[in-house]
Image (spheres, rainbow, N blue to C red):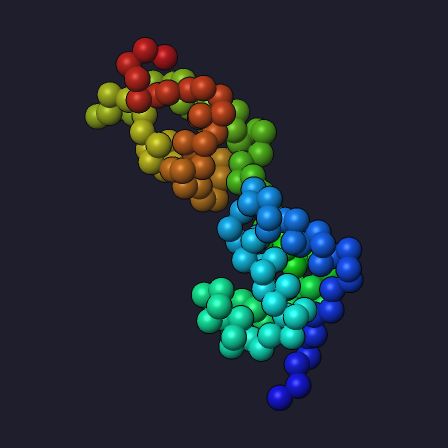
Length: 151
C-alpha cells in the first residue's frame, strides 16, 4: 500500500527537530510528534514507529498528514480552538438581572439563589431561557453574592 503522505524533512528541519528533542524542555506531545516526524523521514513504517514510540497508527497518520498539508509548525503544535463563545445576556438583560439580584427575594425565600434568579428572569420575560450557570457568571463578573446575608 502506497502512502499518501510522505514525510521529507529538509536538513534545517531535521536539525531543528533534533535540537528540540535534545533540549528536553518541550511538552511530551510535541516531543512525540517530533520523534514521529524524524522516524517517518528515516523511512520507518508506521507499525514500527507505533511500537517504538508507543503511539497509535492513527496519530502517526495525522502527524504525517498535517506535516504534508500544513507544514512543520502545524504538525508539532496543537490547533487553536475554533469554537466561538457568545454571550447569552446582552447589557440590558444583565442590568435587569443585577437589579433583580439587589431586590427583595420572593415570599418564602430568605435570599436569591442562582436557579431562582434564572426562573424569575424567564418569568419576567427578560429572556426566553437562561441557565443558573449563566446567572452565576454574570453575578461573579459584577462581584455580587446574593447568597450572603450582607449585600
